[in-house]
Amino acid sequence: MSLLAELAGLAWDGRFTTAGDALDDVADDFGHIVRRRPLAVLCPGSVDDVGRLLRAAKDIPVVARGRGHSTYGQAQTDGIVLDMGGLAGIGPVDGDRITVQAGADWRSVLTATLRHGRTPPVLTDYLGLSVGGTLSVGGIGGTSHRYGAQTDQVTHLDVTTPDGHHTCTPDDELFHTVLAGQGRHGVITAATLRLIPAPAGVRRHQLRYSDLATLLADQHALLAHVDFLQAEILPGETGWQYVLDVVADRLPPTRHDADDVETLPYLDFADRLADGETYLRATGEWFHPHPWWSAFLPAATADAFLDRLVAQLTPADIGPSGLILTYPVPTAVLTTRQLHVPAGDLAVHVSVLRTNTPDTVPAALATNQSWHDRAVAEGGTIYPIGTM
Image 1 (cartoon, rainbow, N blue to C red):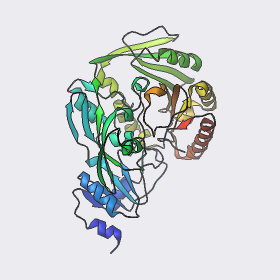
Image 2 (image 1 turned 60 degrees about the vertical axis):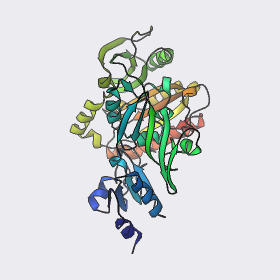
Image 3 (image 1 turned 180 degrees about the vertical axis):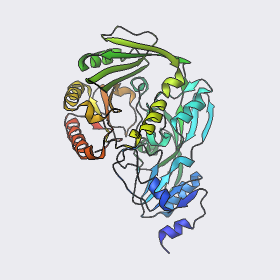
Image 4 (image 1 turned 45 degrees about the horizontal axis):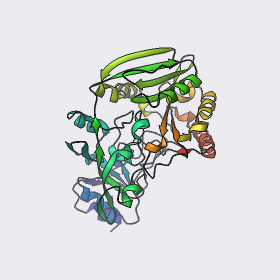
């Protein structure tokens, strides 16, 4: 009897399958560039299922998958995919803590915590990502300049390895090897997260600039004064558009050309990409290739790097729904050991989020490689969500 047949014959709480449609579903990801069809898929019905698979699979590789939002096959394998979507339980809020299973998405977590007037300190722009997925890489957002990464908000982890289930804290080495460990040292099955008071609403400023240098200078000047801070370089009809997305009750002086201001409920702001996702699914762009590139750059070289990057790219190169994001983050708040950042007091996170057509992917990958080489040569570190 083959090992796959033996695995299929085990008593699973969830569903173990080698059916073609299930394999096809996990053979792709949001990048739509790498396609890797596994031998089997396990949708665990319990944490025990995760341990049972890791012990029984022997030499067959096992890769955990959250929402499949990777861009270059990071959650794909020729072996067995562990689809964590079924382990999505969300525990009650206990003061300033909540324990959630790894397959839960951040939208569901936020909805649960807001019932108690609480929020995770750091949210990614898109809330459809799984907790286990972002904790495996870091998790960066517009409040990272204050609170660090999502991995910096974890107080306890439940981790399954081939030798059993482990509940660990910052006193345990496994805690530090698994957070931002890209799934290489164990499968996160649950996490206890810090929470902070959530505002009822936010005052959002979208500051518009005519040039990149002024935008970047204002972004650094605002760093210590605002609640949310994100620079966006967007394609426009006549070239690049430069926008600072800021949340602040009172905005310090800046050199912007225009300020679009709105006050909106906190949940509407946090989940602001939901309507965009619906639109991109309707147009089909959601299903186009996404050869993204992401890195942390030293503050001393980041502005020049961004200036060269914008000069090299055209709006057509990143597509009508693409954009470039940048966040300066003090390295003192980035405490996760496996989240590697440049030396110095300040790192600048840069993500080029492209939507391409299949025929332009090879050129995009070559460009990503050149940016990788330049960033590393200048002391930067690569954030592992990208495509290269």
